[in-house]
Length: 397
Ligand SMILES: Cc1cc2nc3c(=O)[nH]c(=O)nc-3n(C[C@H](O)[C@H](O)[C@H](O)COP(=O)(O)OP(=O)(O)OC[C@H]3O[C@@H](n4cnc5c(N)ncnc54)[C@H](O)[C@@H]3O)c2cc1C
Image (cartoon, rainbow, N blue to C red; front, side, top):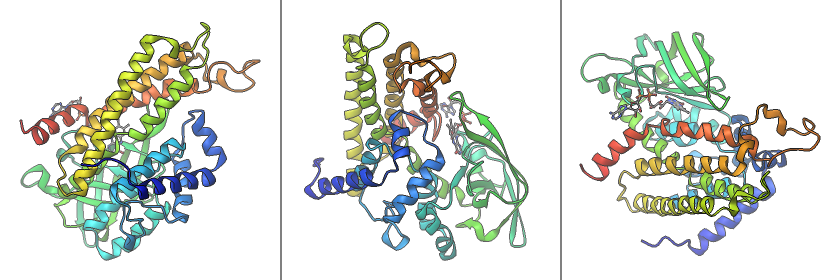
């Protein structure tokens, strides 16, 4: 297995880097450089700029408006995007529902939903989890009953990211209670503006409104919005979850965070020296960097397996290790900014609040980042579930 970048991959990296340097809007770059939270709107704005270059869906085939890049190019693209400070793109359309529509959707569904996914016009959300169906997803109870050419949906989804902003949801609903729980599940594409869809915000510990409870009260969904066959949704849902897990490895984001920790750690804190001068801190950072390098190689191996058709269950390994690394780095960032990580009022970092700006500019986001990264243990399948998958499907226990 040769993991070195080829000449043409290096040339591709240069092309992506040059495009980002001349096209990423200045305000987004500045936000990213001071570690400010990049919003879903920032991501959509950037997505539209990429789409105008023809880069809206890197991994998709050309016939559906994609770039048809291989895994290595997609990885290079993602690495350059993170290192260049680009807003992350919403994964729901391009990485999650899009491939499912391509694989299992009708010709009409492909024509209707794929172009606005590539262009960044439609924002999607994922309606899987319910109050009593998370890890054990197949026990979900949101019911869809068919009346003529419509399903009538009643029930509730929870921990739904961006449902309050999304145009569309890909939802798992129950269409049968007969047989095994997995056998009565169907995938529906639900227009979030349909009468009877409502949301209640869930504010997370980092102070953000990303998550929601979504309620469906007699929501009418055309049968034409069903993906594939009725009661076969579990197969389509599993196809999508594999993609989701590989997404949460966050290798490029962690690489960028290492760089920021070094910058912030080199700055003078109130005790007269940057924390990077301390041997203990340096040794902790070095240990995580070694883990990150190992993850990068593991990722290359998973990509190589995908290229050569020998794919294993790399997604669970990438998710588990990637979570550990990103969380450890967010802790080191807290150490790097010292007591500036817990200000009494966040505005103390804003220009004009104090006579002179205080603390390193990254400090404002250090605690929200730390808090946000805790959720990586849970989203996209919890750590325990990943360990179960690794034990059974990778180690064969
Ligand atoms: C930030 C964030 C964003 C999310 N976004 C979305 C979204 O957009 N759409 C969506 O549908 N969902 C979303 N989720 C929900 C997420 O997928 C679920 O939280 C996750 O699947 C776990 O389900 P649960 O919360 O019901 O926990 P539970 O399944 O109730 O688990 C509780 C605890 O029990 C452990 N456990 C459960 N089963 C086992 C087992 N068999 N063996 C060992 N331990 C076990 C778990 O590891 C966990 O520690 C999001 C979650 C978070 C945190």
